[in-house]
Image (cartoon, rainbow, N blue to C red; front, side):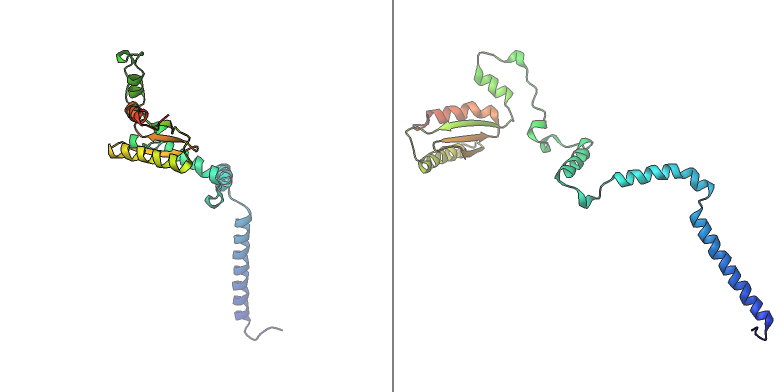
Length: 183
C-alpha cells in the first residue's frame, strides 16, 4: 500500500538507499585494505611481532627485573663511589716501588680502599657468650681508635672482623695479636 504523497516516499527511499551504500562502503573499506596499507603491512607486522615479544611489566619475575636493571646500568654513567666494590677502579699500584719481601707493604698497596676480612680466635676455650664479649671489646677499642670495623661471630670462639679499608689491616692485626686472649 502506497502513501498518498509519492514524492516523499521516494525521498525516504533515497535516504535509506544512501545510508545503505554508506554502510556498505564502510564495511568494504574495513575488510579490504588499500594499496598503501598493503605496502606498509610488512613493517606493521614486524612492529606487531616485536610488541608481542615484549613482556608486560606486571608479568616480570626477578630475573627479568635483573636483566632490565643491567640494561639500564650498561649505558648509564655511574659515579665511581656508587659502583659496587668489585666494579670500582682501584688506585694505581706501582709494583716496581714495592718490596716483595715486605708483605705488610704489599698488603697496604694492593688492598687500599678494599674490604678485607680478618679471622680472630679467642684462646682459652671460652663460652660463646664470653667470646662474643671479648671480641666486642676488641671491636669497641678499634672503633674508639677511629677504625671502621664490623664483627661477625662465626663459631663458638671465632669471629671475622670486616675492615672497610684493607690497607689498615696490618695495623689492626698487630693490635689484635697483642691482645691477651687472641690466639
